[in-house]
Length: 136
Picture 1 (cartoon, rainbow, N blue to C red):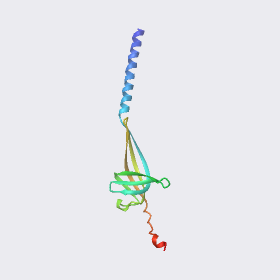
Picture 2: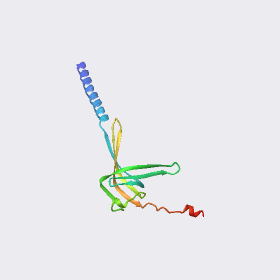
Picture 3: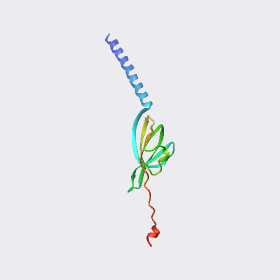
Picture 4: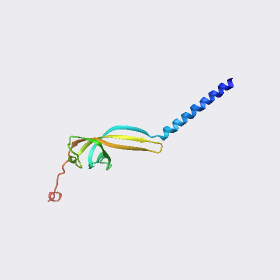
């Protein structure tokens, strides 16, 4: 009798162990998704009807800058501007975007979509100097 109980317990253990291994295997193969709302601000380096490129984190000493290209979502909202045509290269903006992260065993992918573009200020006007005329 004890032998049968021990045999049944062993069979139950094997079933649960195999289920746990299958569950772990499926979890590793299926991608995990995460959506985060983020915001980035900086100088516009390019803009079209579908995308905006923003330069942020400029380090003058090291002569480096970081740039992000954000495609617009279909429900894009503008703040302090009526149309995208009013935003020019060099203007300062802040962009709210959604970042969808899909991570899988082979590697992850990040998808970004701009949701709201906040116009902050126009590009600074460059002053013209007559360098050659100033030395005379």
